[in-house]
Amino acid sequence: MPRISGVVIAYNEEQYIGQCLESLKRVVDEIVVVDSGSADRTAEISRSMGVVCITQPFLGYIEQKNFALAQATYDHVLSLDADEMLSDELAEAILAVKDSWSHDAYCFNRLNRFCGQWLRYTNFYPDRKLRLWDRRKGRWGGVNPHDKVVMQKGASVARLPGDLLHYMCDSYEEHLDTINRFSTIAAKEAFKRGIGCSAWKVLYKTCWRFIQHYVVKAGFLMGYTGFVVSYQDAFHCFQKYARLRHLIKNSGQSAKQSQADGLAQELNKNQRGL
Image (cartoon, rainbow, N blue to C red):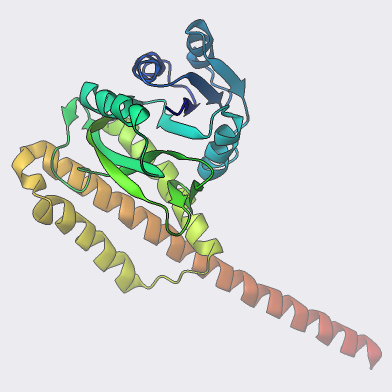
């Protein structure tokens, strides 16, 4: 039977950190919380529950999670965000895995809660996540802010029943703040990777995102909430690509300005030489 380390990254999550840690205590053999310097009681609550709590300034989503992964004692790890918790069914499934670990990693569905309502439709469900694995076979990768566990080639992955419960946001304003923060990070990462973005791309990516949520994944079945979720995630998509296009445009202007400055300097040298 393998021993499992529960690993959590946190920042200003005093509202949810307690239930997150309580759900982990049922299935893991130690818990490590890496706090990014919370201004609220997140670290205090964590320490009061008898877990290891380490303060580490935020390195980036992928980098922070890999740092936290390295702090675990055991090679088998279960990673949660501070606003997530295990459902009873998922906790029982993980306990069963501890009795007969047979794969390199296990994934399960994540159920998101948006402003008090569980999202069982739209692209946000089943929102499958790989969070239980042998760290010798995989680590955090992806592109910030959308981190994911990347397993080695040939690693075996199985799916567990039950849901990972994610308290996504409690208000529209909170969700809009997240959209603003995540779309900015995503645009900068895309720009670094040299991804292009035409005006047409901004338009069709945004429209298609709404159609995926509202029509393809039946968000319309959730009434007004389904429409709001579909619209706001489409807006997230628009913000990401519009900001990427703005970065590309500004970089082109900067390059042209540098060329113009260089040409002006050459002309000045030539004039002084006459």
